[in-house]
Image (cartoon, rainbow over all chains, first blue to last red; front, side, top):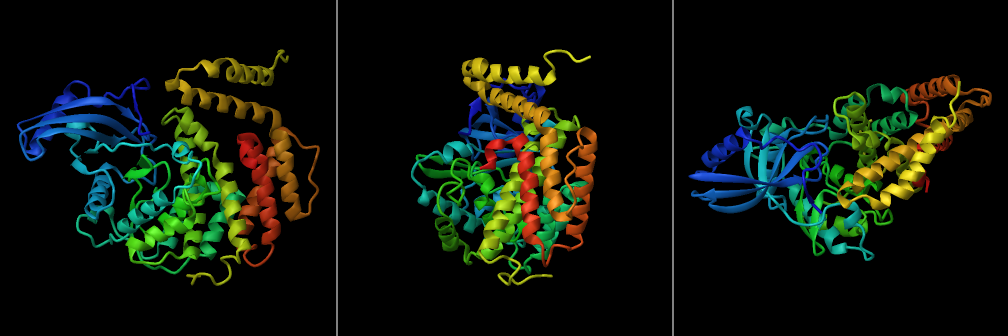
Length: 363
Length: 128
């Protein structure tokens, strides 16, 4: 569940005293309202990197007059390399919402440090269960949910780099695979010369890199655990902080990777159903066919990306930048992620291998 | 002088007491943190107990590739340095493309054995 918890852990001072007053004035101006009252409802989960506050806005006057259950999402303690900053996230959310994706409706975005000190935005609050272990608990498979998630991803992938308003995201890469490889090399740094599993993963990505194809807006953390479900139906897709332009098959590989199947590693589409359901939904709305060999390539990339993030999270703790047991333990997940990658490579090797001619290659 | 019980002994009893006597009584809002504490204590316990054994397993896996004897007498820092040196050599060879055409079977076996040794400490449940 997108749990509302009492703020028993390091209560954020984000809305204390003057901050709240400044926020209310700023919101009134933005909403063309005579008055806005902000009530804090507690801190929400899913805030390893961002700070999520549940808030209620009471808006008097203007087009948005009324009461709105919302989430205020602000820059957290420390950004990690893969995240894009709150204003860019707001822009992405707006584009996705406009394209009909079931993203929470973004209402206000702010990059004026005079208001809260951090960039932040406010979106509508969605209801439902989010935690991966809860979503994958069901004894029966959830083919309709997988199909709907595929449809939603397909809608998102209709957004191309020339879409108005997405200039903030920067240039789209000419060759997503090569761009990704260069980025991973930077992220891993010295570890690529000390850990042979990482070294092999990087080499494999280099040798098997597919030729560039379509480049679209990708979510880049589209997985079980980052969407909400109520009564078995999808209510919202969350956590847009890693979004960017890439090969559309990257999001499919990430969704299907072993890392996000939770209780049901046998259900390859996010622990909820078979890939076929997810792929079929995707093809309904995206206007393109799923390319399983490319998905397999990006699934290898997914393990390396998650490995890099886990290493960085661990270092955030160890360096003293942000002391946290959760971050420390995430750092210790590296062998588990590596084992998942090796299992994946074994599986696709047994299927004939990528090194054959499954995909047209750059090299 | 070595105190008795030593660090390993203390950690072992602390971890098992925490899991048996504390965890069941933890309030729901603190349960996630308590589970993390139990997990961290158990990783530390396994590491203190099994680091050298994991090092020898890794050395054995690397010996598969290099045809050297896995040196059973090494321990502690010497063992760690030997493993690090061989892993570094392997990284360089991988990056140079030495396994692009052949030897991937042996390489995969060695990589799996290396990861299994580390998983035995960080998360034995994931050994599957």
